[in-house]
Image (cartoon, rainbow, N blue to C red):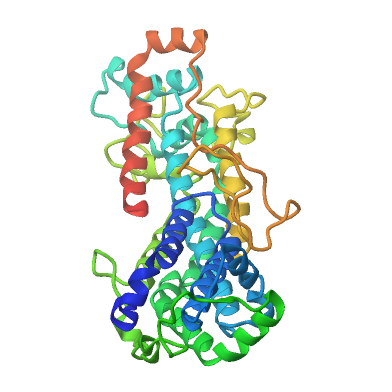
Amino acid sequence: MFVRTYGTLYMQNSEVFQDLFTELKRYYTGGNVNLEEMLNDFWARLLERMFQLINPQYHFTEDYLECVSKYTDQLKPFGDVPRKLKVQVTRAFIAARTFVQGLTVGREVANRVSKVSPTPGCIRALMKMLYCPYCRGLPTVKPCNNYCLNVMKGCLANQADLDTEWNLFIDAMLLVAERLEGPFNIESVMDPIDVKISEAIMNMQENSMQVSAKVFQGCGQPKPAPALRSSRSVPENFNTRFRPYNPEERPTTAAGTSLDRLVTDIKEKLKLSKKFWSTFPYTICKDERVTAGPLNEEDCWNGHTKARYLPEIMNDGLTNQINNPEVDVDITRPDTFIRQQIMALRVMTNKLKNAYNGNDVNFQDTSDETSGSGSGSGCTDDICPTEFDFITTEAPPVDSDRREVEASAAQPGRSLQMLIIIFISLILQRQWR
């Protein structure tokens, strides 16, 4: 559009616009870019270029052009376009980048938790549930549903403690998704950005004489150019405006789906993932490949024989497993690795809440190794959450006692890990695609 409208004039100054879009892309992909400063710099540079074009009869030094750029806020040569565009761009890019980062953090948390090794007590309980029926001559009898639930609640006690923070994280993701569907829609902001920049240029053209007079008054009278290139104050190329913007011409993604529909689809999948960790034992135990099912309470393996399972089902979470009849759980030693994932979710939730309110958030700059404060649009130390490293966390090493138990009963341990990996993979692949 710029080439079609401004032709050679745009080509000669294209780096100003290319730098703008390069920096926006770098911000979106996690770069250390201050959106507000970057946009201010763009308008200052554009004013310098425009001022030379509307005053071709003068020669301007670098110092003089620097003086010109200082008048950007005072003279408002581009009208109200820079202020409006700054608000729209910052809040849209903040919401979009944070939302994408949230999807990444959710996926990484799930993947890391799926690699946590089972405890010795869990391995013993799994061996009893999955293999003791064979020793009792009952190879076709599957575990009772409630029996399976107590085993899995004991084995996944620490994972269940993710649920509260996970649900808050999902709620925050849904809030930001609503922003992306409404006033923070990055697609509706970026589609007409060239039209809005053109409008700003036209404002500058229409007020060129007043702007020039005030600049000359403040910065001094510039020296005449060595040879007068033209008697016109404004090139004829500037007389052409962009054609009216048609919302129906909004481009679609590579998959042929608009951003609105993509966000709506993600929202539905996010809603399905709520209470994922607390319902995980139920998801496993209702599978007919694992248990006899909830409707077959008499002809099932209860841990001792083929009969009904009588103990009550434990509640969710680590502290509620103190009286678990099937799994020995030390409730005084929470899994530190899973606690790290809870913290990762908590930090991401805070960032999502900031993004929902239009406040910028800091992310690790993956584009280079330089340090900085990130981009800013109203984010202060009191508002912005503390940084958390989402990259270097790994599954904790298995201690010597656990290694010894796993060596003696490796098959049940692998069975639990396979169950977790299978179910997480099936569910999360559908939800994070």
